[in-house]
Amino acid sequence: MNENNTENQIIGIETTSTETSEEISHESTLYAEPIGHIGTFTVTNSLFTTWVVVFIVLIISIAIKIKVKLIPKGIQNIFEMLILGAMDLADQVTGSKKITAKVFPFAFSIFMFVLINNWLGLLPLGGFGLVETTTHGKAFIPLIRSGTADINTTLALGVVSVIGANFFGIVSIGMWKMFNKYVNLKSLGEVVIKVKKDPTILISAPIMFFVGILELVGEFAKIASLSFRLFGNVFAGEVLLMSMSMILAYGLPLPFIVLELFVGFIQAFIFAILTLVYFTIAASDHNEEHEEASAHTREHNKDQHVHIEQVVV
Amino acid sequence: MEATSAALFAKAIAIGLGAIGPAIGIGMIGAKAMEAIGRNPEASGKVFVPMLIASAFAEAIAIYALVIAFSI
Image 1 (cartoon, chains in turn green, blue):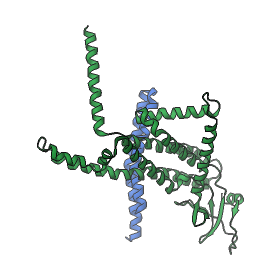
Image 2 (cartoon, rainbow over the protein chains, first blue to last red):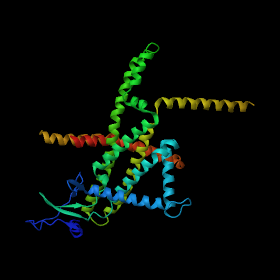
Image 3 (tube, rainbow over the protein chains, first blue to last red):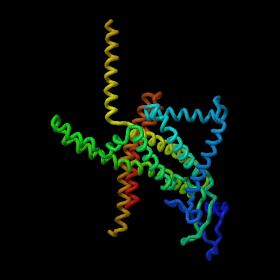
Image 4 (cartoon, rainbow over the protein chains, first blue to last red):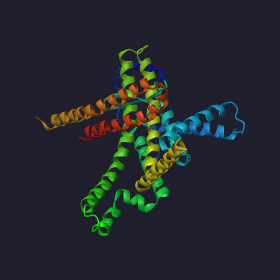
């Protein structure tokens, strides 16, 4: 594999090394490797891949946007099918067409971005890269590395999706209700009003307040779990493929590449679905839910009543 | 025991023990989902998405352990 890398190198930084016969080593690092600088700004290979992905998504969306017609033809057919299927899935998760219509564009673009990022890292372009001389000797740095195999990208995505969910919550149920989800002043205030009628509220109100604080911690846990899940899976996949091709370069990595294609899809899917779930949770109000549920049962009872009456008649 | 080797052990134990629970959880989720699909094959489309979400939440626990293991 190392020999291949030297043959395929397109940009080599030639340095006068005392040991010319030294082998060029490459190991998968936890952080993305720098491939160049723009001013003082370091461009890493993950960032480069992310730019490529953004470019691809932009080109595809513009190409489709220009040719959109009322009667679909060709590629528009495929994308309409794709989006309709995805919207059905999103409806299953959110449970209402109204929320889906608002959140779907965001979730679907996250899905496309992550999916193309995951799959671009699997392309057999790993042979293209730079050779740099470090303190340990010559090291090979590939030009393409999944953007999602860098913790910064996934952390940014996670932060955007959780803050977006909270913002969506504020827009849909209001600032005060959203604030009370985390710092539950409402339950503390109710103590004063209801304490004479129901003394147990003296115990339940502090518990409710503490649950609110836990929710606040939970928001940060959401960011951590979203970002580390994606990063861990994609990075572990890269390491797996690397070590498999170290064992035997021919044939052996093939099933693992298929596995990684599947994992890349599933992880992009889970990221998008969880984003939808967080948006839906943020947009739901606990009190309203209870009222709706009781209204539903009342209606149900009425229906049953009518039914029984019909049977009697 | 030296401090560095103790830290290495702590890392290994953190991720090792932390992965047991989620592994059992994901196994049970998968088993139950397959049981459900086996009983009612037409429902496979409806079972799939909730199964993925549940296993994603179970997986999150392992990820917390991973974060702790890296930060020790």
